[in-house]
Length: 224
Image (cartoon, rainbow, N blue to C red; front, side):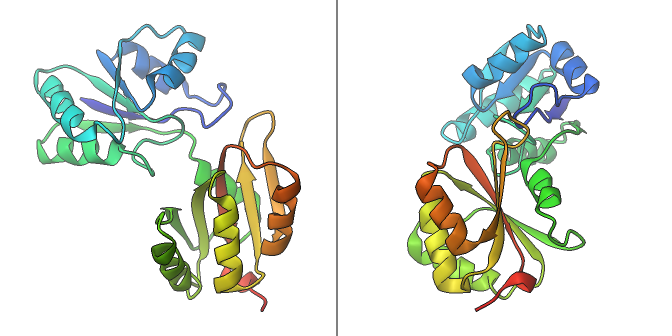
């Protein structure tokens, strides 16, 4: 059995009893960053062996993990934080398991983009999750132009290293729209910044951006 296990996105207390029980009982845990995951496992006294499974080894390692599962063993898949398979390499292993008819199940838990969407106050009835936009500027701008036509609320991820470039491109493509920037969700320094693109840009020029961001905006709020 492959268990897809959600882990906290920041606060270690945000884990379910079922997730703890599952991580304790499986034969092996596949983690995106074993050093990061050891903090969580030590906190809950989980002694299950860890193995690394990340974007750079996912092809070779996924084949090894599938063979492990075919031997009748149990495996838990976790990401650095939140839900495996959402903007991380977990999706590759999940698809292989389905192709190989390996039983799998989902242990629910936190997801950063849902937390940010709810906290944004923007419409939640219909929304579009974009994950990370393309790295190359041309493709990013092209994608932003497509999103400018979108009627649903948009949610996407961005790193602190590229946040200024994203804000500049949003301003150029969409105008000075209203948006919400969320970072360090559930952690001690959780920050939800609401305002127009130019205001957010100015704020982070004065307050060094850290961590990963969840960006939320809606076409209904666009003003040119």
